[in-house]
Image (cartoon, rainbow, N blue to C red; front, side, top):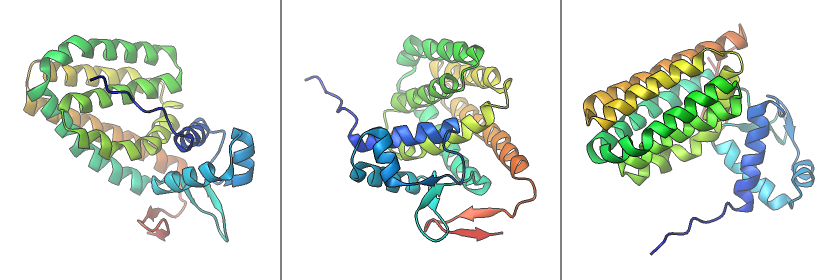
Length: 237
């Protein structure tokens, strides 16, 4: 029986629209998010906007404003560090399982992801760079055969998109290096070198985290550092 993928819900579409505007910089950090204005701009009722903002607050893109309401959250280097530490473990597991379970499919389909990524890197278009990067990592998650890997990462992709966009707009040479590393990971998966595939994947994520965190901290300069907590409140360090 053919499985039919459900169409994105209205809430999902609003989440994507707001995320795209945050990632592109149309909605800058500190921008106030007014539900009525967003609903009118997207041609929807307030309900899907309200639900979308709840989801975006949960993944760290939106936070409570002083007094009341919501604003676009600034990038938090501490949260980025936490997120990438988790990501390294999960995606390392994905690469290892992919090498153990789906090396044949990796050989058939993987090179197209690498070619698309290199083309996107040469294009200079940040949106294409991000989409091809995420597509490659989700491909490895799919090859792993463990559905919980992609489900665990899915809520964090909007925040990761924002981090990648913020850096890639200023680090032009980084994209081609990233695809050299992706090609090494894929080669290990194709050849069934599961332990090495996991190591390469974890090292790849760790290197990216180092670049991103350094970039964010440099942008923020001497402002007091804060850590995002589960409640969404901030604690000065």
